[in-house]
Image (cartoon, rainbow, N blue to C red; front, side, top):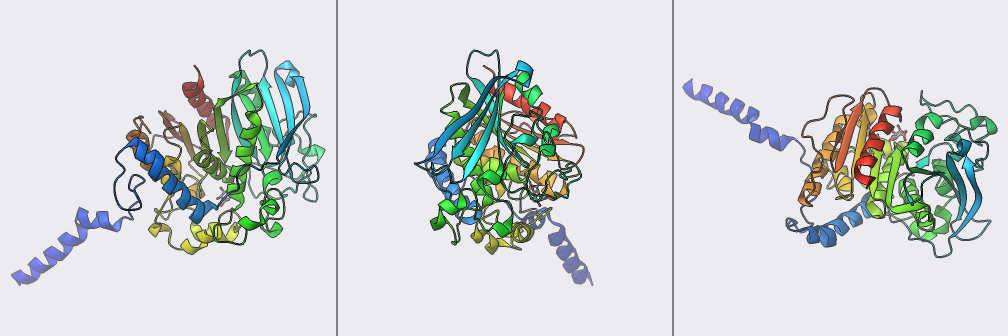
Length: 421
Ligand code: GCU
């Protein structure tokens, strides 16, 4: 009898013991441990060994191999108005001809640069969902002729102005609420944007036939093909190429911003292109900032089936393996280090697993701290609508999947903190 009690006691003790529970929790791979199992011991080793190792891992298993800058690429500034927005800004529009040919793929870049500033200004660059003409009511913005999604299923955006998958005059300013150009300019920052479809189509049935993809057939039909998210990140780098030719912009102070799928692209752009001095990820969720290991929110199977064009074919090998992945998204965030990065979540945006986005930022913070910065100055998720800002920033606001005035207010504060001399 005594023996039986003892045996049961032992079974229960082992079952509830914290040691065992710790083992049951899927553990995150450590960004500071090399492929050979050794710990990274210096900042130089991080830069020369571990960082390239991680970039190669994510390029082969998740985002795909992107092309480099095309040698024949050409810029044409086709519009420049020093008295735009009632004299507040200079508007420029630039056609980027990826292969230099006027009948080849074209990306239009729209810039608003604050007036009355003598020095080159810092900027925020981000892709938009509905075309450049939707971020402002400005009648001079060229309306994109690229294909356009006509149903978003998102309660915050009514896209009934899109007719036969084309933008119309009625779409002007449609998305202005998410792009507070006036406030951004008032703080001394330029706003730079381009339309996602000019770079790569978000419609899987297009089968990579538009934008940059057809220029690189060798990078298709392989396990590490560059998907749409990587193509968008590539497009952001091409915008940076243009900015480096524009004397009005201080390219040492450029933040790359993106919401949702475009936030996934902003993170990968920041990881692959260190010219971006800051990255702002607004509810980038799965394949963006959130962790797969928690098994909460959108999973790999959904990403790979609903959005089969977003990531490299190799990523499909990990369907239903979310909690066992040999990598995770905190490692992507750590690739920004030590550059400032801001991760933002929304309470109702369950698909993006807000807790997972915070945990991911927290796990990336170990690299920021290793490199001598404060990283994320929070060990627990901050209360709703309270931004924490160190070298890394984070907030979770009330509400759903969106970009709001609250979000921008935090980003502008973060930009002031890091960009104002
Ligand atoms: C879907 C998708 C998300 C994505 C979002 C968006 O909800 O599941 O991964 O971030 O679209 O881009 O709005």
